[in-house]
Image (cartoon, rainbow, N blue to C red; front, top):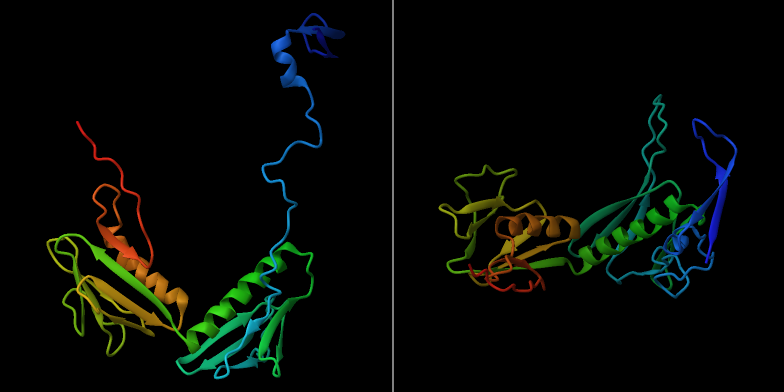
Length: 252
């Protein structure tokens, strides 16, 4: 089988059209693939519909839309954002709405929906689902609360919640501290963020509770980083249902 390529080659002694003969094993590299190439997924691509999903409102949760404060004489290129204030039995929270996101609430059905100005805009679609997730998490936080359970796995690993600390200064009045004994020569003391409640139902368990899911999980990650789970003995600090696959021991 012969395959020829015709083209103009810039040679120092020749500038006319040149015909090159290629061997058979190089022919597939120069062939143009068909337009209907096989894809990794056989299903048609579909965009997410998270932003358009309605949010169910518990009966003891109230939402209020606050307009941005007016600034006299101030000129800015950034459009001020409106704020949704969520109030429930466990406290209050707020979510800022981008300028292109609209908010509607059905009092009869106790459902809230979000919409955007241009559904074809990629940036607006991304923030549509993100804003809806933030609002859903805050509604769940003020009504039921968010929790994170940490498990300390290892010989001598213990945790306690203390009202004072020797290595960390309090950031606000009445702050408590989580004291970890995780194999170091000294205990690790971490201040509990404002709005988060920490307790130790067992010496090897830490229970974190709060209305802000982001703050609760962030504090859980800051505790976990002191003893990340290792794959040889399975020791470390595990968050919620976290597991690790054990590896075979290294034999010299």
